[in-house]
Length: 295
Image (cartoon, rainbow, N blue to C red; front, top):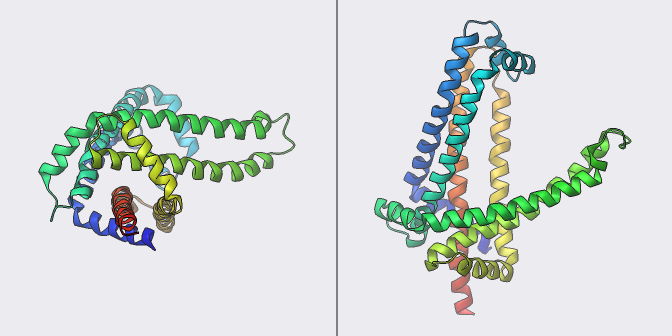
């Protein structure tokens, strides 16, 4: 099927231009260190010599975290502020390189080309940023709608009006999958709009929004099917990551290193899936365009 060929093409193209994956990984790693180091310093200066640290290494310990928050909570505030700043910076940097990533897949140079990547990143940054803001409003609206449905169907989550707590879990099992399927459509529309924006080099966002929407609807089975396939790969990586992490027994600090290395491998996989998604979308568009021309 054409969508499996597009996915395979996306994987091949991502491997071909893997320096982009490593750059995104390095960016993620450095910003994570920037956040983690102050937290490490705070822990060492407060409970660094406590035997409770050995218990924390084994897994989540609510008692420890709650006690730490009550005693040393003031030290967390600057770290939280810094984390928010780093998160915003990370999102802006990722938005910045989006144009370069898409342009690299579209132009399909023999190998990774820095001039294409950085040049197109700078050219499309402001347009990609505006597009992100528009869809952030759309995604927020969709989330609020489903949150309202869940809230009202669960009688306002009030313990006095619910017969039992199972009602909340029952409603969540229906609302959550429905939200994922609907939200996936709008995320898909956003990604296709990005590709159309770079491919056609449109000045105004709405010049790409409508053509992308028409292409999605016209080829809905293929476009939505490919997007769900990419989403399934993402869930598979998350599941494998969780399964592997549960196999590691955190009985000592010696387990931290292998756990860290394994987690970094899965970070690389997740970043690769982001690029595979974009590349497969571009591949599907090109394949469909050729098919339409021959029909």
